[in-house]
Length: 249
Image 1 (tube, rainbow, N blue to C red):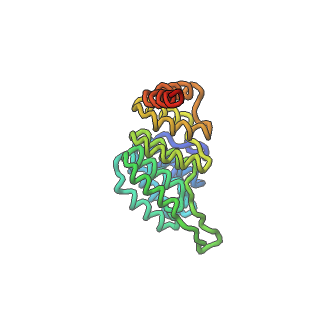
Image 2 (cartoon, rainbow, N blue to C red):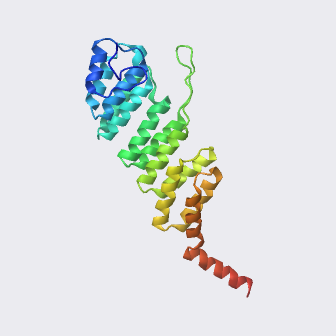
Image 3 (cartoon, rainbow, N blue to C red):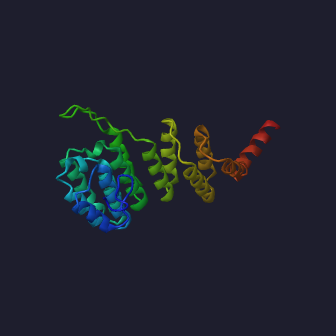
């Protein structure tokens, strides 16, 4: 019987669990490997997670899962080992998994650059590369589809830019999201609006509210406060007074 927590529907909670499962030959699917790697990374045992992935290299059906690589990419960013990501991506290529056509790995890289490196320009470069990727048939029977950014990608980039204080860049991403029919999370929208309110940028706040209104991404309490600020912005009041003086001149 597999050790507790090692089944197909649970991730390992102890690093020793991964070793036991491996030595007893209890791997039954790529999901199990993904759970174990994720569990090790969450405990900060990134080296052990990488070794486990390498030990499974002979079992193609297990390491073909890009989710494993996505977890490792994210973990390397978190522990300040961004320089090792390129080597990991090369390893993916060697196994026939094309990193630049994989949304999971892209999302992990964008999150890493935004949240850990606080490097919006690098995150945008990844997003641009993602948008440019092509669509070629592979040697087997499938067509490798291009990988356009999905709502998860945009939310990661949006939240990361907000956390880095890059509000105008975050607004740029928000505009792209709305055009594609995506919306930020309610929590992300709230934090963004609150941050702009603190900055006192009435013009940006007005622009953001217009975008959020199109996708109904802000809760009622947030709307009431934000609209009140916009309407009471000194610049807005000055414009109203000027228009009034022109009308009644």
